[in-house]
Image (tube, rainbow, N blue to C red):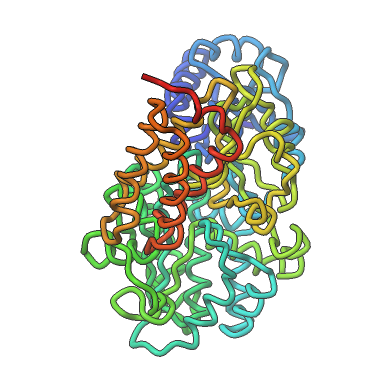
Length: 513
């Protein structure tokens, strides 16, 4: 039997040499007269082990990593095609502690299947959710999603079923499903991992959403910084049309649905749903005033569902396994699982899908292994560049929407960025204001002007100029931005600034000339 080798095509794995390792394995096998087939997969999310090479054996897959081109010769000499021992041998992937404790629902297939093959997708349970949705019909499909407790995974946390029901009941000549794939938060990569590693899950989720709400057209708005994801989506959509997953009669049903990929130009504000819609319509990405909500008057003034990649990619699992199964994961009003992305100064960076309720400390210290530098953790930022900074004293906070909100934080898109004790929190606060100033769409004064004034105030604080008065002014400015900004960009900047000031005040009382 020809040995099967699995190597990630995920862009993060490629950045550390996955393509070169694949070429070296092919060349070495040919030189030695050995036959082997290579399948390029998505990543399992263990980024500190990339490129992670897996080999199919009689007892299952055996993983080796991180593999460099210089390791290939010794792997062959050790007999890795038969799963034999080597210093880089990690064993059965599912037995690795980082994977073993996860609850993989959304990312169940990532790293296991060929993302370019719809046949492989079907073999591993793909399309069963869509088939059930076709049996249930629109109303019951929406009820299933509502009962699952799924909330938007893009950051807002709004109940998905309620959004779908609103669009379903709205009047309009046509309805749209818009996938927000403008993943711009620092330390986040779950959207990209799905698009590169399991694109048919996203497509299936969008089709189900279309059937449920009466929408016949979908758009995936993806950032231009994701060229591999864009290529993968375009290829997958082509296959989906061939297999009648898309088109005038979805899986020979009476429903029709089409998907188009649109590439954004890298504006952070286009992650906000109304700015995204403006960009889709060919205009500058600026935030719209609400109401009307997109569910009533969205893309081209028609009822529109705007959901994040992870929200839509989770829908097939919910329909396939049932609302009750999904709802059994999580705590309180935070149901199901959350793909948590560990990044920054962390030993084991990667994606960890787990039910809501795990504490922040467990995620950072146990799962993430603490800092990569070996120094003490001083702060973690959760929820992207506009998320609050939490010190170790708050590591008992459960990872769920309400628990973070109770401590003036937000979980956002699930990104956790770790900092050790060398970080200057006054500089981090300044960065938040500077970031807002650069990325502001300019439509509202609190965001456009407030962010610039914020940088100036913090610069005066850092220089020791009337520090106490400047800090009072900074807090007042944050209040104005929080309650006066048109969207979350300006409205959330106070989270990192005020949390840095609250938990790390000593960094604001050092005069710097």
